Image 1 (cartoon, rainbow, N blue to C red):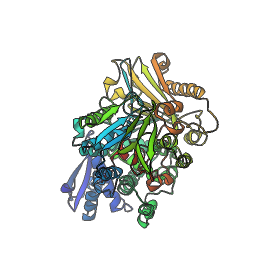
Image 2 (spheres, rainbow, N blue to C red):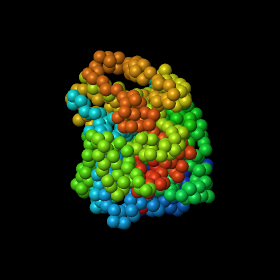
Image 3 (tube, one colour):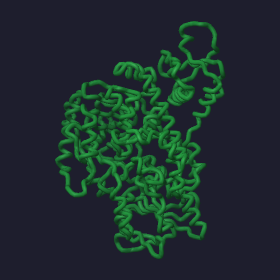
Image 4 (cartoon, rainbow, N blue to C red):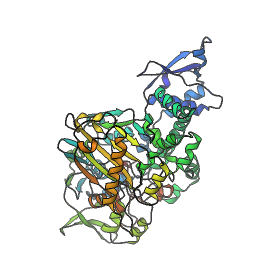
Length: 586
């Protein structure tokens, strides 16, 4: 884009899919950074930038924005995508640490768990020539990114949104592969369809004209708030990836230095996300629509730092995508690449403990008592489970137990006899009292009387997810995690959640859904604990991502005593994000 921008020219944006012009009017209060970021954003979400020489005095030209040289330079600067470079500039990542150990003639590597972090680690190390064996307790790879197939219906039982494709591109590139040769990605637009309790809807879309019309109908002036919010999201995203998520911290001094302390304020780390929304929107519907994404990290929007405005930015700018065939295609393709490079996957093989001696991990002992030795061990099992169940020293396990954990969920997987056009691909149903519903989940560790919930209907983008004329519906109802001292009645919660969802969907014209459900599979926090060894049944990566549990303060990727024992997965640095911690390298 930068090559086509010249000083003295003016900006005219035309949405590719519509005929009407989208005019961004200048205001004296707008900074050059604001304009540059908005221009960069519109470019990335599929808007063509038409640039015309300044001449004449028509009303149409008065609505255009002049681009001085300073703004042009900022546009070019903003076009740098931090993930594209972060993997090449990290000072030291745990993959590199493994490589350094292996240079001392050690070659065999054991990985416990075939979640995406473990698979990505296995693929990277196998590609570099190491002898890699992956042990998985379940019958198939994937961990929380698994799938369920029944009677021709295919469900993703974990993530349903493919975000930040550049991270995945970097992973495939590190394996000598091209992502597009393995994944057929389709962009989802509208990204979400919000359903509010009074029947109003909001479709989050990259079509700026449509967004402007919808937002202004809810709250006059709010479209300008959206643009300013995206500028903040861009700043938070760039800073967080460059300086936090894209690198390892091996010393406290690397993390708590003057630069990073200043970063805390730049990222609004001390301001609650929902409170910060008052700077951009006043209507509760809009505040809910642009904060619920904190739930990806198992955080309440009322407790999460404003840093996480980066999530909404990435969704609108980089897009929300879906791989044809389902999210499980990512698992299958990475396993295939790893196996092609010599990695061995062994399933239905639970690990009883990690064998340690003289300050080193020697290998693992399986449930049947047999031992497999290795020069390096990588644990992709949930980190609190590893420290509590697989290692001898319980003091670190006790420390992890005192950390803050994510929430959980009650899941329903429904094979349905008919298709309901009322649903889009991603559907969010917001409770009348958004705050009270979320507080019941996070503060009371319970199920709200009126829950917020999410419905995924993959056949809207991928018809192969269900037999013709049928529908595949996944419903996620946020719920509290397992309590330590008292046991919740999850059978009762499941019944209540199901009734609340069906009642809300009936208001959408789906009153006969209960009769159209051919089969139902349901998960609860007990399922997540049993199936994936997730501590406290916390479904979103166990340890949450609050301010005191990120960066150096998050559990590290390398054991501080057994230096040939490494960790990857959602509960270690950098945290949730599928396979990121399996790809930290210089």
